[in-house]
Image (cartoon, rainbow, N blue to C red; front, side, top):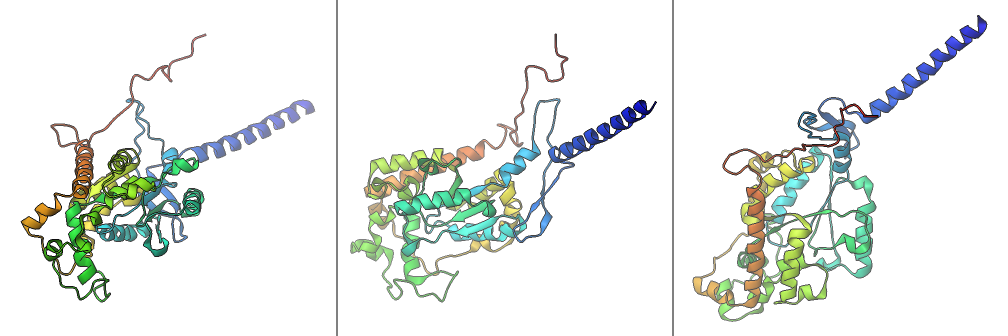
Length: 359
């Protein structure tokens, strides 16, 4: 009888331990409901930052593992190697506005003397730092620097690159007048060419260095990278490398002239960082930020002369290439012939997970 009592107690204790172990295991593996909490940037642990629809649909074989998605979302690293005078200030300030609300970090990459290419030891240090700096993730890095391929340095993961590109002559003219008159972002800052009232047309007719077409050679090297050949104006190799990087290494490249659409695509694709971006951009003054205070559009004969240059033709080829790709990505958002978002599901899954096993 005593033996039976002890056996019964031992069975109850064992069952209790098994129940506790199963409960703890199950609670760590399942996310209840459709809301997700994370540690926010300002230290308020557990603050609700965004909700997510639960798309677990066993009938269609479509699986959305929220735990896995959460892990990916919290490790996001985006690099925006911004090209000067492409609307980057407006876009970056929008991102700064969203970072606290959506709980991620924004960091500016400040390179000595505004150099666009990192030295070899700094390249290695940069990729290691960004890859290992987990306390900053999710992170958005921005700065005027050329593309850097992380896989070249043996990194286990690569960041998502994004960028904006602008019509090359428009960018050059904007930069020309910016150096003379500044902009409405920092109106009291004296610029490098302040006091020089020569128009862009006059500059071209007198063949001055400030309006030399070689000054347009900037978007190609920014997309091309840290190779010496990237920075040689008129290099066909650099143009082709820039194209390859644009389609193979960049998550998204938008157009300055279509920034609204660029932001919309980011909100749809990367809601972890850009949730609410479209609404905020439209309601705030970010879309009108940093305009050159005084700018004279070039005359048709000036435009024609610039377009004769090899550098303009190559820069424009990259711009048109980027524009076609951007519009292609936009078009694939929706189902052809109908105004509905494209979707996908998994089906014909074999073997059937619910079927009884055969002996």
